[in-house]
Image 1: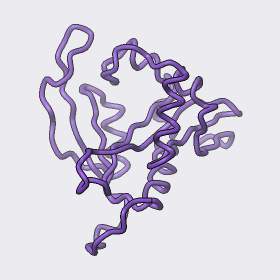
Image 2 (image 1 turned 120 degrees about the vertical axis):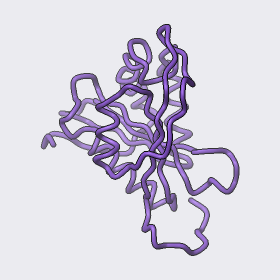
Image 3 (image 1 turned 90 degrees about the vertical axis):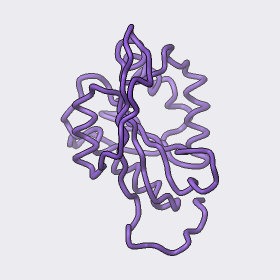
Image 4 (image 1 turned 135 degrees about the horizontal axis):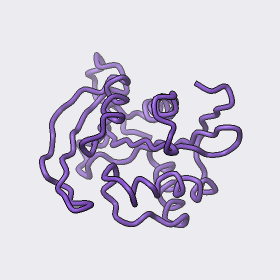
Length: 178
C-alpha cells in the first residue's frame, strides 16, 4: 500500500473524479454492464444515495481520487435489508497494488457499523483480477448467472460471491441497518 494513499468517505464533490475512473470500464470492457458512462451529475446522485443508506468511499493518491467502492441495496424485499451489493473500481493500471483491498476494507467497516451483515458482489466473466481480489478478501462463490449480459457483441456470465460483514455467530434478530 502506498503511504500517500488516503481512503475517506466520498462527497458529491468527488463525482467527476469517480465518473472519470469508471468511464473506461463502461466504454471499453464488459466489467460493467452499463453501456454509457454516467455524467458527473448522475454520479453525484449515486454518491448521495449510497451515503444516505449504505456507504461510498474514495481512494486518494497524492490528493487525487484514483478509485472508489460503494455499497447499495442487494434486493428490494424487506427481508434482504441486512445484505448489500458492493462494487470497487480503480484507475486503470492499479491492479495488484492494494488499492482495491484498501477501498473494500474501509467500505466493509462502514457497512458493518451501519448494521449490514452480508456483502454480495457480481463479477462479469472473465475477470481474473476481480475474482482474485474478492477471493483474497474472503468472498466465497455462490453461483453464476449464465449469459445474462449482452455487451460488445457477446453474451457474458456473471459470477456471484458473498462474504460476511459481521460475526457469523450472531444469530439473534438484527436491528435494522441505520
